[in-house]
Image (cartoon, rainbow, N blue to C red):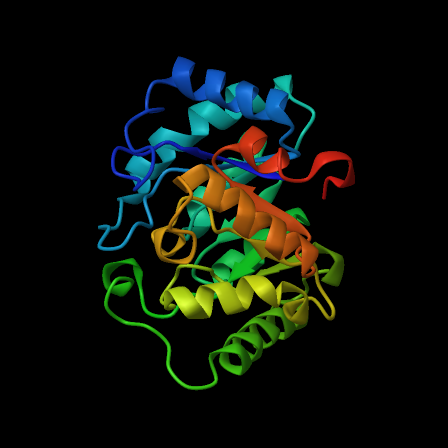
Length: 252
């Protein structure tokens, strides 16, 4: 179970809430108390229509939090970034996982992961954050996603990445329709023939269509439970306790 900590002013769910270091740290400790097995820290919003954040600004947001948090917790810290320098500086500060929504399309990002021998989450995104609300996949989307993820993983291995460090994320909510997102969730295990699979449905807009009678965290929990039952290995969520309440003693 991976807890989300957004150090941004404009994230779709909790933008601006944790910009102060004391509040960010308090939230991270709270997520761990709730049962998070890892904390994913991001300094750039990936909500639909989001603008890119300058590298220096992203570093200012995430590095102080990672430096202070990492020595005080016994769970891995992941940095959610598309920038190789931010990834490298985060690892130097104490992070131990790279989460790249751009699928490690920049070879410099792969080189960072290889140099520091850290796990890498390779995600599929159709389009870009600017187009997520309007540009969605067509045709045999499952085959297209698998082909992309397998190709990026193979490329990373050729560049020297240890296979044990690769995690795949089919990118729920990133350029897919609500129906496509639910199909991915119900078939999460189909992406994990060789590598662990991460699913991140948390508080995304498609949940309102697929679970109309549930509030957003309850819908997240229901989607996460479905993903776990279908073979997902890691769940990335904002509200860890609400999600875990759907698992009981058979927790993922």
